[in-house]
Length: 439
Ligand code: ADP
Ligand code: ASP
Ligand code: MG
Image (cartoon, rainbow, N blue to C red; front, side, top):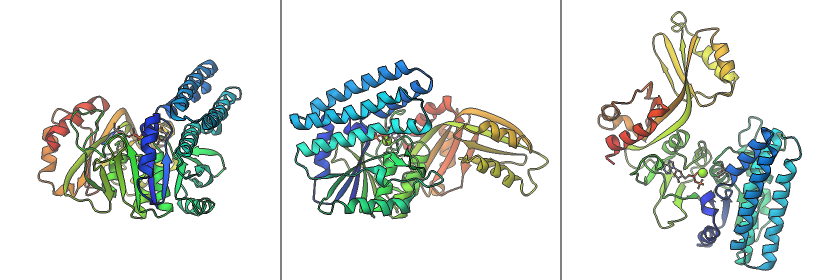
């Protein structure tokens, strides 16, 4: 079994859906296809939901109408058979009617998640109708029947494996399955999601659940590049990454992959390939156990970081002080990304201010606290990076003009992380591109 995931731009136009239909039928290998919502749809749904939560129902209605118009044109261009076009119209009617109903009731967290789920539900149903038109045998399998979260709101891989087997067994004669990325159910049975960009995570979870031979992530670029192509002009695709390297890059901001999507594939040792729907013959990037070459491979940047400096000259060297600090973060389920210590202070970074006030209040009982917002973590990732010739010298020579506020090195063999003010992000990525990659 193979898993193939196609992102928003890969299904965002009727002709792209045609390309996808060709890619998924390139041979006879049984395949589970995971689809995102059409590009732009989840952003629109977030906007609709934001309008509703701020009481702007007129805004929500206007945005819903604009989205519906886009889909009406989309199906006219996609489906030529009158009978199937009428079915596609029914699909739109069902989902847009649901969106209109949400504008007449009060918005809850659960309803908000339901709104966000509409994109993937529509893209898969429309693609399934397109496949029917093209006479391509397949089964549409609902992710909401098998993609489950556990009590900690994390994917429950054991349950997913159990449930997907049952769902697949309903279609013994089929070899091609279409399902939704991103959406799932939580322990309360409500519709939930795997956070933005979560379709990659769906693909990796399914790959692990069915012990797939490969997990292919098809997107709009020919693999993981050495630097963020949205920020830097010259970037190059990386041939091979280890699971750990890819996980660090995804977690520290390489948008091509969802931050935590590597672990399920890694757990089952399933290679993940990053491929370009628009250029299917390009080699792309393969992510597997082995790192391939030694040395620096890529840099990524994660914005929205908050640095917290915890100062206590009296307590720091006392054992138990770090535990007390970590317990506060644990209590508020807030992961720490970077940490550095000195004689009198501990500095940590977090990527959410959800519980910042409570965290500061509790830490203030044991130390004095300084908070710095609008920070960016720049992560340099590679294999045996410490063995790379004069790596630290090269790096700091390259970014001489950047005010680095924290450095983390030695935590793993494949990462150097720097904390910088976000205003220096573009400059830093450009300087690293020159200094470390000669680009
Ligand atoms: P999809 O909709 O297919 O999931 P995404 O937009 O989530 O696609 O991810 C692909 C985009 O990620 C690329 O178009 C590119 O702009 C961006 N990106 C950011 N960093 C990197 C990187 N290091 N390598 C490749 N792409 C990157
Ligand atoms: N549609 C969702 C999003 O835009 C999930 C995904 O595309 O991966 O975030
Ligand atoms: Mg994505």
